[in-house]
Length: 66
Image (cartoon, rainbow, N blue to C red; front, side, top):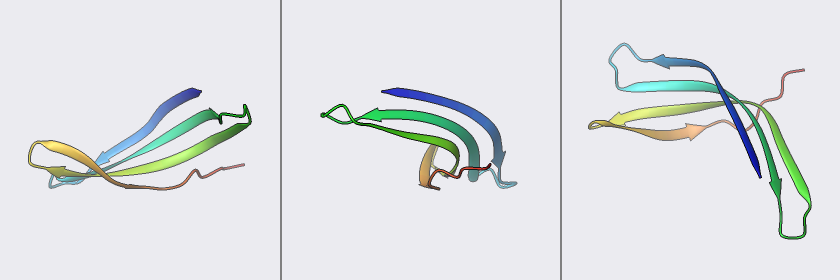
């Protein structure tokens, strides 16, 4: 397996209780039979601050921009 991540942008709400991150990914998976599946593109991850911790609440599937 291979996981490459590059954070492109992070925005935090004015209230400091929500945020999102835009991340470029390049992931290569291999199943038990050795077949490969690659996910490459851009994702957005959305976070909510709960107490003193940030929790990821949702994310988009991989968006591919050509």
